[in-house]
Length: 324
Image 1 (cartoon, rainbow, N blue to C red):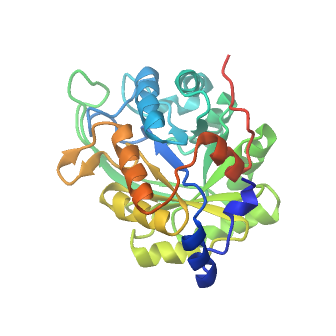
Image 2: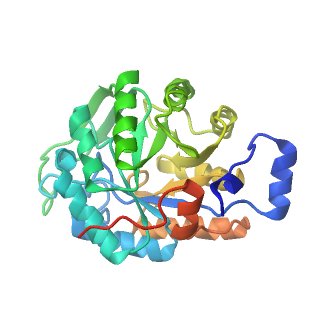
């Protein structure tokens, strides 16, 4: 499939009806196996170490995940302090590649609160194929639980109340560093005015089509409310030659990803975004979340993309990154 075959006028009613009849492009499922904020204290099944991440991702890969979103963590504390160290990302990537030979690897540059731009850029040297790029400033306020034995690193509950700043020049730096390394940016849009940053990167030719836009729905304090109307608004302002992917945070995950599938987009699930499978029931593995997406997609007559198909849709190298 040529990537242009996966791009269409998502807002055009007649084209939507045509797609319903002849079929949408294959669905890309990204799995965010861990994260940079909450850890195993929020759900004991959340993988923190490189080995645990690789093992859990292998199950998600077998379940149908097309791509993996990687955070490196300090296993002693559970914090994302490893964002300062390329070798930590490299280890996770290498272990995942050994188990999942063709999976698309996507490293974070978001990491967590409290890092400099240069510290966040360290993940790019671990040779991912995609990398997240937050476009604009994001407020962050979240409560995280203390870590009881056998976990360590935080002996009391804490509240993070901060503001992750990103100006135009910094987003341009992220994009130019990714382009220099042949890494495709995954442009994370938390609210509509961040499209100014997206447009700036496109106009300066710092990103190449198809542009991968990820809607982060329901990020408390820093993101647009996760409602059908708001998701349609985000889609309504999508630039030309762009693909979109939908995230729903916490209880918003299921309705948002279902809408993303219905609208012809792609989706992300995983422990980073949701530690519960349903109300009161902790998620057992990333594979459990991926399996649910696959079931929904099949019921809605969406084919799930293989990594090879996803590489064509994203217009990235057909040869998976290697970690000798």
